[in-house]
Amino acid sequence: MAIQRADIEKLCYLARIDLTEDTAADTAAGINRVLELIDQLRAADTAGIAPLAHPLEETQRLREDRVEEKVDRDALQAVAPAVESGLYLVPRVIE
Amino acid sequence: MHDLTLAEMCDGLARRAFSSIELTRHLLARIAAANPRYNAFITVDEAGALARAETADARLAAGDAPALCGVPIAHKDIFCTRGLRTSCGSRMLDNFIAPYDATVVERLAAAGAVTLGKTNMDEFAMGSSNETSYYGPVKNPWAPDCVPGGSSGGSAAAVAARLAPGATATDTGGSIRQPAALCGITGLKPTYGRVSRWGMIAFASSLDQAGPMARSAEDAALLLQAMAGFDERDSTCLDRPVPDYRAALDQPLAGLRIGLPAEYFGAGLNPGTARAVRDALAEFERQGARLVDIRLPHSDLAVPAYYVIAPAEASANLSRFDGVRYGHRCANPRDLRDLFMRTRAEGFGAEVKRRILVGTYCLSAGYYDAYYHKAQQVRRLIRQDFLDAFAQVDLILGPTCPNPAFAFGAKGGDPVAMYLEDIYTIAANLAGLPALSVPCGLVDGKPVGLQIIGNYFDEARMLAAAHGFQRATDWHRRQPEALAEAGA
Image (cartoon, rainbow over all chains, first blue to last red; front, side, top):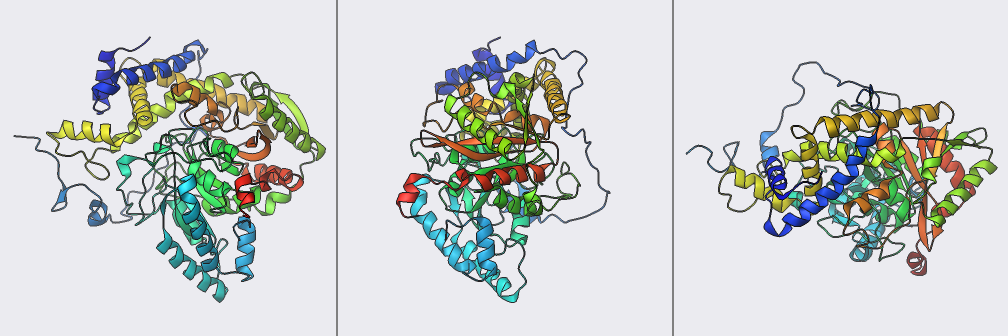
């Protein structure tokens, strides 16, 4: 099932990627090409097959709940586009 | 000096035949001269490399040298390196200086390796040709009008052009093996969980795995030795003993049962590639291995399943690039939504956006069962094919890629044509199995890769098989004519 322009706009919003007018048609065509490929999965007989989340069937390892390393906030924020007093700055959210 | 293998460099440094400073300077000079031609490096760290080489020389002089002491290597620009730009081939991270080292980087440094710089790659490792890099494509040293493969094309080209004896790389659907094949070098994707992913920028977390690229199986074994092992900072890294890979290299091939999947030798395989692979198989037979015909019946579903799972995981992983904490931020955002949407529109290239959107679609309400759940079921079928095969055989051999290196732009219009270049490599990622590629021939002057897929944690046996092949053949010693003519 090919997706249309309106679907692309919705997807772009969900993924938070601005859709530029000049690339909208190419974007739709490329995505539809990939959807044709992955639609081949529909033909596979998977009745009664459990999904495989981890190739070795391992589960998430948990560690003890104790302090291990201190995060150096200043070092991590040194690469941020805008910070002030240890806080990340973004455009005003509440007027 | 650059023609020495990594093992020979280790040996020469240990004997003090040359110093790490001499070796490092020599390779830095080669990179400076050759990089404008190949575009293999995004960042060269001359000062850092020389400082590390000096430290290495002091340790060598003091007789306190670890395994790779003083050997210069390169890191794919997907591994975080403290104080050195880590771009992941993207405009999004063009200004990103990582505040820490990836575990792989840390371990190789602890083993004494000297970092020359960071290698070019497809943006966020999404590509099979290096054409999606924000920094422009890497050129294949064997054929400058052709792609080096991807996504680890910079690491592959750097090793093939003798700019570094070895390099780190990552493989989510073939990104180590396919460029290794196209550039005529040896590349190994280990078992999922063998090498820590900590500090390696995530693409598809259930598939991503780091591994070495080098000119021979022996050199790959030396690098893997330093990279492999448990790391508590990566919750998917497995706590299993790491064998001595180099010591295991001399296991004989006699008695080895080698499976040949019918599905890897069918329609779509370049006849020249098929011939080269068949000749390589004959060499394994000559050394006493037994060839067994096998089936991997769900092979044709690997590429479709991968293009659900990898984009789905990528869409989640890449949501962290928001213009707030690091990386690119658009100018003068009107509001928070505008900040996110324009930052991501400007920071990501077309292929990365396409995969994020496909992944978003597959995970969106109403489509999850039809795509992601279904793909994970197919993933189990694919894994079961391999488990059945490994009940009969020790290793599975076949071509790494259907074709040798293709020309720039050859797959330009159609993303799926590009995806199908990974038709033989993707299944190992879905199953989490280790797989490597070794050079086994030339077609029209361009290298062909032989793929060796092993059972879980069987890297030692795979490397031994590759080493046995390389002792009897010289494909891994061939070099691009341009290098040979330059008196290299």
